[in-house]
Image 1 (cartoon, rainbow, N blue to C red):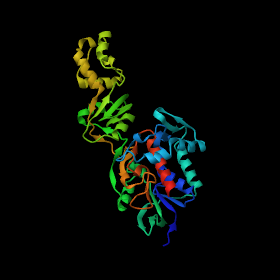
Image 2: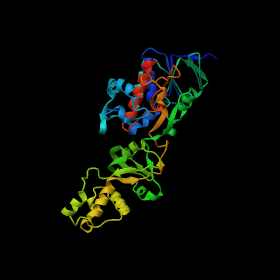
Image 3: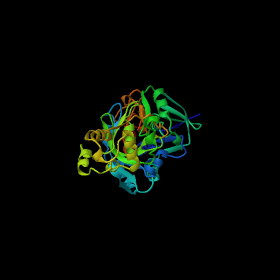
Image 4: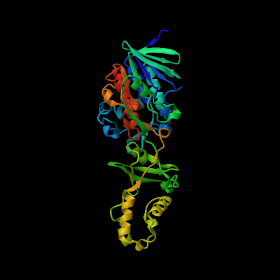
Length: 390
């Protein structure tokens, strides 16, 4: 059976894959964009509460985790948030900035998917949806992809199928299987930007489900100041999702529940308002205050508490130790950390050094951004870099 011939085959019609296909197509390349899903951009559609946090103005290489912290510099430096924003504005999509440089659509995430589909159309990209790949081979400088009863060949193959985070959307580790098939290394994938679970010994905090507070969360030297949310299973909210990408099993995280409090604030308050109840002294949600004080075992009026006890409570509240029992796994993770090793890829072109013509981009690669649009920016930048190189 003869195979349809292309200049490049892109596996995965997500953010990175569509960006790579559109970029290469608009450079005159004949591109096939192939996906087992029945529509493109499924993960984009659910992002940002359905409004797609499509980039972050604070994008910088230090906002990314990777075995090689320098790897993302080249792509991010050549395709910036302003470059993608220019594309958004060219398509007439209204947007707004939320906290911490996060940019969202005013309307729907579907506008970003429509933008990418239109960019692919402008590049003459052939779209093959609902086709599962059954085999990929490489011989005589050509990749041959069998999918949906069809065969396709091209001298360039782009792995853009992401990682296993959010399997209900069809996410798998397929990119890693192909990478290993071609001799590339894979950094152990793990759930990232994911809620924590707490064990039975901290069940008291699971009973606070729905309570949130702005905190500073710490793991080793890494710190984030954002909202934390207690859930029926453990800890979530932006602060916890951020620190989860760094966290290692069987290690504690520290939470400062009163990050704006100055040292000695409780003893100073005791001098100023001795009859104030300790419970009312903590500017935290009532249920959270009760849980924290229950665990410390102190209460009553400030006047009845020793300075030593108040200083000890201050210290405890400034670095409350939680020992997560684990995370909620890939099912609830927003992204996958780890992936195809950057040691085997060119940071400029995203091509595999061992296999000319093989590229890996986006979440499939061992580059993981913070919460807040950083992972989309990596998808745009790495997709653009590969699309320019094909």
